[in-house]
Image (tube, rainbow, N blue to C red; front, side):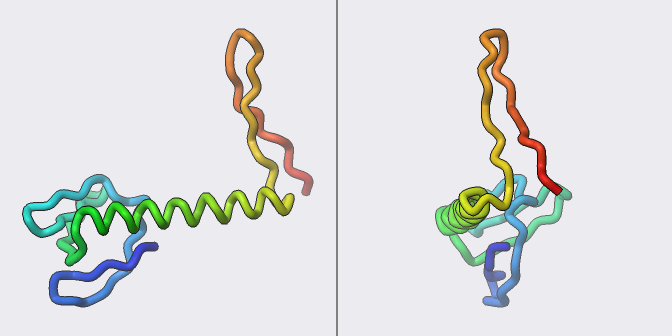
Length: 92
């Protein structure tokens, strides 16, 4: 979740995976995949930075878990005819 503010200053959390688009009109308007719209105090650049930071954090946590051996890491395998994504079996 990323923390944003409405124009009146009221904070709220948003799942950035639900973002469809954001535009500056001049206020920043966020449209979600379900069509809901939010006007936020953050600029378009600030919003983009928050989304990038959130996604980088998620990827970093996934890499840390993979490095600790908690999850198998998919790998690309080139067979000569096609490139396949190999998903290792999970030990249960």
